[in-house]
Each structure stands twice: as C-alpha cells, then as structure tokens.
Amino acid sequence: MNVCLRVDSSFSIGSGHIMRCLSLAKSLNKLGAQCTFISKGHSGNIIEKIGQGGFDFKVIAAPVHSNDYVIDEKSWLGGNQSDDAQDFISLINKEIKKPDIIIVDHYSLDEEWERIVKQYFPTTRLVVIDDLCNRKHRCDLLIDQTYKRQADEYSLLTENNCKVLTGTQYALINPSFQKLRKQSINKKSLLNKPQTLMITMGGVDAQDVTGKILDYLELADFTNFTKITVILGIACPHATKIRFQAQKSKYNIDVLSNVTNMAELMLEHDCSIGALGGTTWERCSMAQPAVNIAIANNQRTIAQNLLNEGAIVLDANTFSQAELCSAIESLIMNYQEQRILAMNICDGLGIMRDVQEIIPQPAKDGHNVTLRLATEDDIDFVYQLQCEPQTRRFARNPEIPEYVNHVSWMKDRLSNAESVFYIIDHDGACGVLRLDPVQHISATHEISIFLTTKSHGKGVATAAIKRALMLHTDFSVLATVLPENHTSHKLFNSIGFKKISSSEYISEKE
Image (tube, rainbow, N blue to C red; front, top):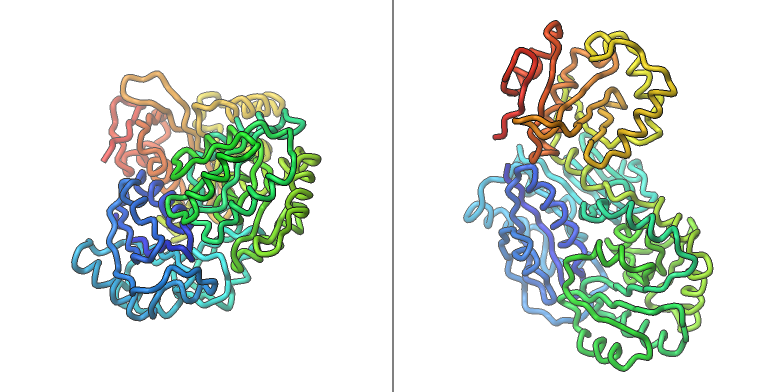
C-alpha cells in the first residue's frame, strides 16, 4: 500500500504539521504502508526531520521570498493551488508509485487542490487533516482534532460521502505518549506543587515567545522550580539568544534542541508553559498541567474552548509579566485540578482510531469494522455477551459466569499489560476480541472472539480478525476451535490461518 503525504513547514507554518504527519506515517508504516512525503522547500522548513524519521521525501521548489513571518494561513503555500496540485501530480508520476491513499495537511489547500488531484487519481482515497473548519473540502475522510469540534460543523463544507472525525479522541499523537500515560498520571497525582517546568513554544517560535517568557521569569521568583527545561525546534531562529538567556538566568535552566524523546521529557516534568499546537494534546495525554499560550490566530478556537473548560490560557501577542506570573501561580495553587482537567481532555489513542478509518476494513454491508480498547465502562456490555447462548455454546466453560466473578475477571484482564482487550465496533459496539499471551511453540498470543447474536453472518468477525492482525503485525496468533464449531473452522480457514491440529490454527505472516 502506497501513501503520499502533502504537508509543509516554514517559519510561518511552524513544524507541527510535519511532526503530526510523521507520527501518522510511522503508524501506517507499521501496518505495511510505504509512505512518501511531498513538501515545499520554504524558508525555515524541517524537511530533514522526514529523512531522519526514515521516510522518503520529494521537494517542490518554493519561490524566492523573505523570511518574514506571515500571519495569514491562506498565503502559506507561496503560490496558487492549481500549480501546486500539478507539481504534486508530476512528482508522483516521475518518481513515486501511484498512491492508494493521499493525505493532505495544509491550511492553504482546499477543494480546489483536492478536486484536481482527485480527478487525476479517482480511485485513490483522499484524506484531509484540518483544524480550522473554514473552507470547503472534496475528500473521502476528514480529521479535525480540535477540542470540542463537532462533525456537523463540516456539514456545509464537505460532501455527503465524506466521513468526518472530530475532537481530541482523534488527535495525531505519537503512540509513545499513550505508553507512558498511566505512569505519568500516577507520578503527577502524588504532587502537591510542581517542581520541574518545561517551556515548549513549538518547532519554530518565530516570534520568540520563549525569550519573552524567560525575561518575565527572571523578574519573578518561583522558588518551587528546581529545574526548568526549554525545548527548541531545529528551525528556531532565536536559539543562540535563548541559550544566552538561560546561561545567565538565576534559575537552573537546560536548553534542548531537536529532541526525539518528548514523551519521556513530559513524564519527567511536572508542568509546562506551552504553545497551543500539537503539543497541547501531547501534554494532556500525559496529564501534564500547563499555562497554554496561543501563538497564532488559527488557535483562537482551541484557546476559547480550553478557557471555557477552566484551562489556563494566554495570548502570545498581549500577555504581560504580571499576567504570566499570575497564570503560573494559578497553575501551582490548583495543580491537581489542572492535572485532572488535562488528563480528561485527551487519552493519546487518536492515531489508533485514525488509521482504522484511513484503512477501512468493511463487513459485508460495506460499513467499517474497528477495534477500540475496552474499559471498565464495558463490563456490563461484555457480561451481556457472555450470557448469550451462542457465546456459551462454543466456550471452553459453557456455564454462564456469576456477575461478581465476571467483574473480577474482566478487571484482571484489563489490568494485564500483556493482554489486549478490544470492543468490536460495527455501527456500534457488537462484540469482543481478545489477544492473550500464550505459551506455545508457534504463537505469541491466543485470540478469543464473540459477537452479539444479531451480528452473526455479516462478515463482522472476519473483518475484526483482519483488523486485529493489521494492528498487531508482530504477533503470531493462535486460534483454538472446538471440533463441533464448524463456523469458526471455516472462518479461520477463509482468513488464511494455517491449521496445525484438529483444533488449532496459526496466523501466517505475509
């Protein structure tokens, strides 16, 4: 499967679009996709990060222009959409295989660009990543990770066949954050006051908001901060000045550039002062409270929505030294309330949800089948499934479990870090799929799957198993089937499992 991503970075655009598309590409790559980036060579770009991430990239030549910071996102392209679309198509024809999926993440591009590309690649799935909800799109799937955004806000901006995913549950966050989320929550829940502070104002920070913050901190005296770490992007034009400020500061300040371990740094640090870009959702996924600073006009919706929920938000263009200090003091005094607020905004599982929509796995009716991680909120749903006659008929234990025993069993399964417990979704929750570690000469995990009675015969089980194998390419999966369960024998044969005994099947890697 070939995927092309059209995304830019510059002094005006920043680095966030490239970084979130890199996170998405890494997840798609694990599913077997070959990802190629096509990006324009603007001043202040971070195209080299694409190569460092292990991906091929092609560069569209940018017109010669100044390094001035451009506020209007419609001007970020540095040319017209028609020419850009033709350059994009030409690069693909010359140097890249025809894409199965095109992903475009650019505030300057809309239905004009998308129509040209879609006409040339009519069977290619076109995915748009947007945050602004201010222009029309012609695509198959649209993802907007804006906090509190509703899908119906795009009703007049997309066509009827476009699926729209909105909200921070679809935030394009590197999975490394979710892996450390529980540890970070536990660590920060024990604190009365934060002692370590991160300052991260995006990959470029063309307006030198970082320098302004350091100047203002120098006029204050926050004795609780034993360590301050400043994170700079590789394209930051003020890096030398900021390092000098840190060196002369009365605080213990480290300055790091081009970091690759942001999740670990957020685990290490108790709180942040950070820009309202992609790192906002990274901070929230790690339950890291923050003074959030809006650094661009296109962040106003996010800023207002967070402010309405009780988060601490400042405007980069207007905040004073007194306002910054007041915001930090509020963060310190209300640390646990702000931690809980951040934790509940984003769970860090967005990319897992996104890739399942980018690469559909339909049942017989054509509707997509997805998997989501089960929680304790699913205990009653799973129990109802356990009580259905069809479930018990082919279970190892045919007796219906006592409810109290079921609750204990499921909580134990959910807490087992080596097991994967999914709820199957096909126009709503309709089944369970588990992958549990197993001691077997040919397998790492054993699969268990059961559906609601009304979901049988619709191809949901087939799609769900294929989806699980797609998400866990590193697993060798064992299926144990009772001799009389003829339907399941047929199922695993049809999917391509290898029969190794009268009751056992093993998934075969491609």
